[in-house]
Amino acid sequence: MFAIILKYISIGVLPLLIFVIMTVALVKKVPVYETFTEGAKDGLKVSANIFPYLIAIIVSISMLRASGALEALGLALKPLLDYFNLTTDIIPVIFVRPLSGSAALGLFAEIAKNDVTSYATKLAAIMVGSSETTFYVLAVYFGSVGISKYRYALWVGILADIIAAIMSIIVCAIFFL
Amino acid sequence: MNYIFYFIIVFSIIFGATHHTLNDVVNAILDGSQKSIELVIALAGIMAFWLGIMKIAEKSGVVTFIAKLLKPITKRLFSDVPPEDEAIGDIAMNFTANALGLTNAATPMGLKAMQGLQKLNKDKEVASDAMCVFLGMNTASFQLVPISVIAILVGCGYNNPTEIILPTMIVTGFTFVSAIALALLFKKFYPSLNVAVEKDDRRFFEKIKFNNFNFKLDIAGIFKKIILKVKVILINIRNFVLDFLFEKTPYTNSDDKKSDSEGGNE
Image (tube, rainbow over all chains, first blue to last red):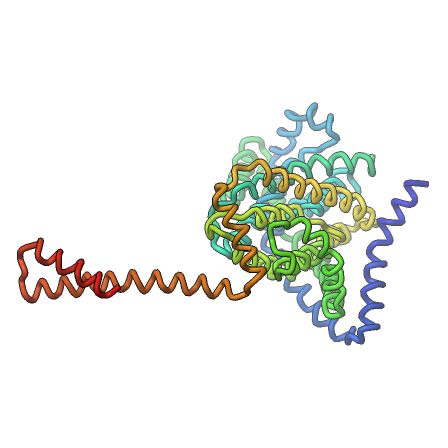
């Protein structure tokens, strides 16, 4: 019963959001079609912006995997990884995530491309989806107003990343194991 | 990122060469580049659709509406920012845009909020508490729909991509709350700049509440200082030139004159 409710929430969020937005737009008399096309134009731009990062990460990680190095590492760490229901693919995701959003997305794409129905894909999806690139955000936001001493902002960001990684592992295990 | 990229590529070539998998590595290059362009094309469609919908949300005022709803909460989180300050609204807008996955729209709003916070900041080089809380909120940003992740899942042929929405929401929500809690905790225990500055801060905010031209006064003060400094420099130059022209060799004499003229000018 509980599982079914959760499933409906997961499925329902997206259409509900779209429904509400469309209804409000209708009430407010927004030119829906023109506005939509205007926004959609940016979609290609966004994808084009991600593309260089995707290709860099996907190709380099594919090479690493093909060379057999990833497997060797996985064998070495197997007991630890098994304990947390992880695979070797996840490790780079955890470390790259706070550094670069596009790179993390690329790593995730590499995992998904390999085996889309695997547990690792779901875990990586949750990890990447629930994150923000800490160092990028700090650099851009503080840089824009010329602040050089971050005080505890950096610590909060890093701790939040660690919490997010741990939570992803726990929640994913609850949902998909 | 540069080192990581370099290391991965060089390492996998060396590892492949020493483990007789070089052929696979070469194939991986060709295969990987082809796969990534396929993925981008799949991604572009969903991305475009979502951004189109979100543009409607922006234009119809849904984003502003949610931001307004959140204002009471934001006010409480940023107790050291005057509640009617524009920055509070910007922060709420930034959060809402982030939650809806409008990263491109969120960044300018966030930067505007930072400028607002910087105006209230005492030391322009050191982050204020409000900034730290705001960025803590931002680095652990709450996501309602992780659209790019869903797009990739769809691109790879996953048949039920929306099932990751709820787990992601739980994780991101938990992280978000704990990031704010951490920031507030740090704020209490982190050695603040010093007590005198904090007291000064409070006075500063009270001033802002009661007269709005406080900022102008500040500018006037800075100008006064600059003008004073320029005056001193000009006087020094003038004295130097006078000394040079009239060759007043005895130093005591010229020094006396300098101080005299300075006093006269002020």
